[in-house]
Each structure stands twice: as structure tokens, then as C-alpha cells.
Length: 429
Image (cartoon, rainbow, N blue to C red):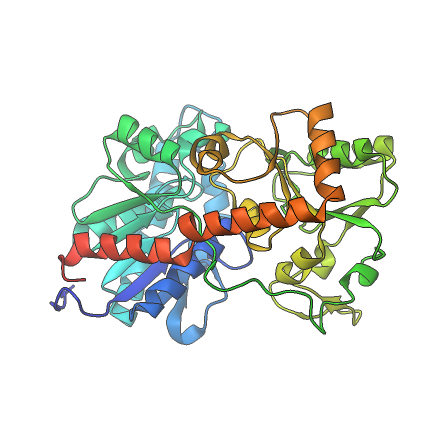
């Protein structure tokens, strides 16, 4: 494949590759933000994934790249939770790898890609053949790469027992010439260096703090009424998927202990893809707590619109302005998009001090209601104090927004992405 030689400061054609660029998962959201920033810097961005909603003229849909593709799932099911793989399984991996390499080469040639941005596919082995294919294409072409790593295999218990450690060592992630590795928190940076000797730079999750948040308008003014809340109710928002690591049982306990019949817990997202056991447990907790909980996932989407029944669909940006308190009691997060969203929309937030928050976010001075695995009397009393004091909420909102602007804005990512490109192409970027 012939590589074009351009001046170091020339606009680049940048290709994002992942299993999925669709919906509101963290990888998709952060990739879109990076693309917005890079395009603002004069570059052109293109997309390849198994599940994709980018414009066809700028994207290549490769169904085999999706982690839930039947052929991929069949192989993946034989790789984890076991210690042995047969030669037949190895042959399956190799065959899928070759087909995926064809797709990647086609993508590069079709859009004349000059820089690749693999989004998490060289970090978490949800699609082993895709990670191997990506690694081999990089080795064979030496195309410049900014590898964006969100979650690593060693951060997920389900990948601990496996029959593909040879592949994990080679491709998750690889240490190859012409690669810039980017992680989203300091723990990942240290572990990547310790385990694999790979240097990396931190670009945290970001939001457009330079642009003030939208508020209540003619479209979303009726949201409370539409979801069954009154103006006097205390709107407690849990803005995450319903999966076990989000610790939603703590939000239920907090609302119960507030002891205020006006307090309503609102869950904005659907259940995740980790089984139904957690949802069943939450419904039992809700029944025991005897508190009102409102599930609105069917009314929240990526864009405004109408349901099949003709009811309004709202975005998260429509929901946040109505909230009185945001709960974020996660046990583990790679970074914390919902935390940044709460800060951006100037809402008080309850945070469980998960490790990345404790190491990378809390020391910056954010004003939050903090809990450490338990909803204590102190946590309940602080929550009541915050809810009762508009002046305190406004003070916290001002401090938190200023810190978000300083540490987690697009300007931060713009500067750091520019530095990554400079390392790949020269100092004139």
C-alpha cells in the first residue's frame, strides 16, 4: 500500500475503527467528541465498525467487526472461562482475522486513511480476531496510529481465565513502531507501563465546557409531567445503564432514607447486556424500600422524536435540566461520563468514591456528596442540606463548572491530540 508524503502540518484523513459506533456507550461518545475536535482542527474523519450510524459517504460498515456477530460470538465463547483451545478454534480465529484484515485494508484504501484511531479494540478482548487483525495491519503498513484505550483485559474479571493469553500478549495492546497509546486515567497508564512496558499519555473523558449547557425550552418544558412527576417533586436522576457495577441499589437506599414522599428516583437508561439478575434484584429492593421509582428508558434517545405511540422522545440534555440531584454510586468506572455530565449541567452529584474518581478527579477539588460503599447518616444529612439550600447548590455548581472547564474541556483534548499528531508527524503540527 503506497503512503502519501505530506508536510507535517497538513490536514490528515483520520479513520476511527471499533466494533460499534452507535448509541450512547462511552466509547462511541468519546470517539464522536474526538472527531468533532479533530475536524475543528482541519482534519477529516471516517468511520469503520460492525454496527455504525455514521453517514455512508464517510463510513464503512463491516458486520463481522461487531462483537455480537454470530461467527464472532461462537469463537469468543470458546476463548474465556477455559484454559484450552483446540486447533480448530485457532483456525477459526485466523480465518476471521484474515477476513477482518481485508475489511480494514478496504477501509484504508477507500478513504485514503493516513492516521488510524482504534477505539478500545486493542485494549479489551471482546473481539479477539478484530484486535489481532488491527495489530497485523499496523505491523504490515506502519500506518500512524493513535490507539485510544478505555478498558483493559486485566480490569475485567471475566477475562482472567482464558485460552488466548498468547493473543492478549501480542495484540491487547501491541507495542509497535509508529503508535501513540492514549488511556483515560492514571491507573491505566501505570498498569500499561508496568505490565507491558508500553508508555502512554492520558486524555481523560471530556465535555464541551466551552459551550454553556442547554436548559429548559419549548420542547422539554413538559418532561416532568410526561414522566409522572410534579413541579414540587424532588427529581433524583440516575443517568446510567442498569448494570451491577453502577451500584444503583445505593441510589434506592438514599431515596428511602431521605424520608420525603416528594423524592422520586428516575432511571434514564435501559438494562445492559449482563443478564437480568441485577434488574430482578433492584425491583426487589424497590419493593422493600417502598419508594417511587420511574423508568424512562423508553422515552430517552439520542435525538428528539416520537415513539411508535406518538409520545415525545427526549435526549439526556433534556432530562438533566429538570433534575434536582444526580446519583452516581458506581463501584467501578474507567473514568465517569455521568459525573462530567452532572457537573456540566450544574447539578449536585452523589458519588461513590470509586478508584479512578479518588485518584484522578477528587484531588482537583470538586464539590460533591461523597460516599464510600455505604449510604451513611452523614451522606443522608449532607444530601438533605444540599437539597434544602439553593445558595449552596449554586456555589457548588460554579466551582465544579470552572474545574470542568479547566481539566475536562475540549480545549484539553485539542491540545493533547495535537501533541499526539506532532509525535507521529513532526513538531510542525
